[in-house]
Image (cartoon, rainbow, N blue to C red; front, side, top):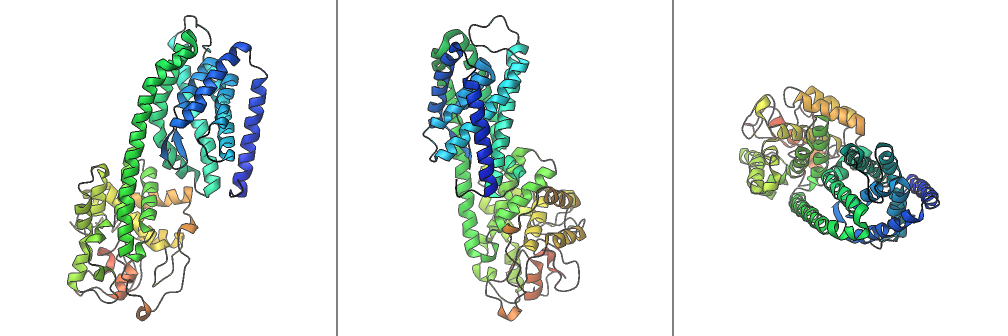
Amino acid sequence: MRDLPVPARLYLILVVAVGAGLVVFSSLRLSREEWLAVLPLAALVILAKWFASDLRAHVNISVGMPIAIASVILLGAEGATLVMAAVVFAPAAARFSTRLFNAAMFAITATVSGLVYEHLGTTLLGPPASLTVWQVVVPSLVAAAVLEVTNGLLLVAMIALSEHVSPLRVWYGTLAESALPMFIYSIFGLMLAVVWSYAGPISALLVLAPLMVARWVFAEFAARQEAYEATMRSLIKSVETKDLYTRGHSERVSRASVLIGRRAGMREDRVASLRYAGMLHDVGKLGVPTTVLQKAGRLTEEEYEAIQQHTVRGREITKDLEFLGEAIEGIHLHHERIDGRGYPLGLKGAEIPEFARIIAVADAFDSMTTTRSYRGARSIEDAVVELRNCKGSQFDPVMVEALVEAVDAEGWDVADTLPAVPPVPIDALPSFASDDDDPTAAGQLGLPSAAPDDASELVDDASVGGPGEDAS
């Protein structure tokens, strides 16, 4: 706990205090019959923590969730609060403070969800009378949704305070994928509650077997996602080793692309693919000679053409990675321009795939707001001005405004950019200063005479002034 920032520590103390109060209050109000149901359900929750499936960092889906939903349906708010607080005794979490926070968070979640269920439906402890769908199924699904949202909000707040990141970024980045597992687990929770109301604790055996199959499916999905991530990390590391000034660039372009995609109303499955495209947009540099990437001085026509080929090489490298899907065209075509003066195909306007139009904006924004060897980082405000100046010529106006709105709403962490430094004289630049993402580098170091009159066809952004002006 000592390694947490002060706001996160205060938040943890608040959540634990509220959760503890709810546990004490609930324990004083249960009947003997309710305690006889709480104890075996609590034991199942503790056991279920051994079988949690990680979806993302900080987030896992446990087979305890159906038990939580069943306890809400069977016992209402007070009984469910005690059942879920039992997670404090689960040995899966390494630190006691983590278990304490989780227990308190689940207690609060169970209380809120249970109160919603009690208001809408009827608890099922004991053989139920004749009940309609509206008295059980609908309240159960609503309570499950409330449980997920409440749990998500409490968890997002802790992660955001602990890691100084945008709550919206945490919500979309770590919790959106839990919606489908939670819905399926809600159905299992309802099944468990109904069977339990007739058969008692033995019913758990009838429901938990198919539940474990579902858990295995989600675990396989999580393992496959991790394999995809490992593949991307390996490719990105190779690119960054070869082209030193792209270090961290891929992650930032990916994040900016996701901001644009969500602001533009893109479906979440496409946003996930867009994230891959942003991460791997420069992977084709693996096919560009290192001597060209690291050259200081004027590029020959052959070297200029080799740089341009990185988009084609990127498509060749990624075309067999089926999980990338739509991302492959984004990787291939992110240097196209709205006015048709881009490469590799010279596409124009709506001919350019949406992913490529998004990455072009994100790529330019990151290039402008990070420090390079020959100039300091531009401010976000200056970068926005340059992007807007290039709307309709190089960049899709819709995507530019989507990025501006997203950055205004969620911010762009200054800590993610390198501190600005005074420009370095050309003759003092290291050998790896040739930066094909930045028009200042291209303009200063020189393109062959056959190249376009500004560096914008080579890089991600357009010159909007005289020589040396950049919109990277």
